Figure 1 (tube, rainbow, N blue to C red):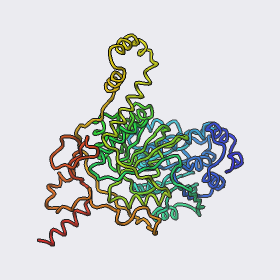
Figure 2: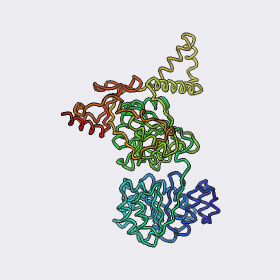
Figure 3: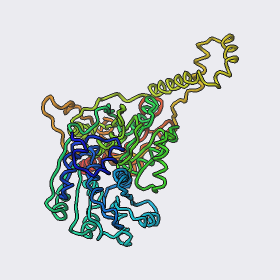
Figure 4: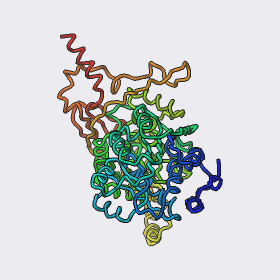
Length: 525
């Protein structure tokens, strides 16, 4: 790798980089910075975590004229979290030169942003929708922009921002420096590049492994209806410092958050429908360790920068391997070890294999923890708590009472009783979780003889592996779409893992199976 000092970067920016603790470039930085300094348009293909922000940030900050009182550069990002993260990084890069960056995004009071814009930031980092609001209000004047950067452009495409991006680029002067960064290059994105960029230079950097080496990746196979009980048992057994649980939908996040709270966990949820003030509050709580578990959607968790996350749990498998990489990359940071768990239903084994082949890393299959495993975890917590209290000043005040008790009672029985008192037993409270359809892989995994780990016969049947039930006999759809979990749930339930927390009801997933059942039912009439 090259040293930043070798790339002919402005001295003020080199000093800022040194203050940030960087000396050597990453591959994407080494390739992009010299080309961008020449003013050439760039299409950069690289995964997250490769140093893209610094790669486009250095040439961007270099081009800023501090005498100009209008915003001169625009960075578009798919999410507010990423906008905040990029803006913070650009402020660090421009700190010595006197360059200021401002993040603007939906969910934050627009008049507060208008006030901040009056302070004349040179760089705007924005989500497309909120930038369009300011453009319509004329609180941002696009005619003064000379640099435009599209960050995680494929994600903006998948989120439906493509028309906004076209409108924004059409309003910016044609004489500009444009850089586009994306993990993939779908055809629609290629057409945007062809239309709005001038002879762009393609720079592609592929990491040897998409995932981090110090993350132990595990997976557990189970029916949909057992997932919540397994999650609670896992949290009780492993007692993570900080854990992020990923759900596929906002509804899933809300239900998991409420249900985990009922079961006694310190938990908050994070998704796109929450007000920005509330989202910031949740992230602050999580970073401070006030809560131990955060449940989030993919979009909400992008840009999260927390170094002490010990566990990532994919309650629902992501749709693609890029999202998987984003998710598990929340742990194993700053040189620490991390663990990721993925919950897989029998019908999702092919999708799991696709993720493994795409990331070129194999996950370790482990058994679902039982209620007894969870209880053992709680007991271990009690032991650690008791031992850690030995040297406390409060404990020292009770030595007299302790000696008296020891003279009257069996020491082993006494310690066991103390452990029993401080053990917080796993909750069996009844909760309800709505079932989700299994992820259907768009890419069939390759099975090259002995190369694939699982054989065709190991795919598993529907749901819990029992006989298929005629759709006519399943009951009303509203009832089918609910999965009741916990002791005392409605009758007709299948017991959950571990015998302590029973799961009940049917999974609401599997629309394809229901359609096949209905067709078969019509044929037999």
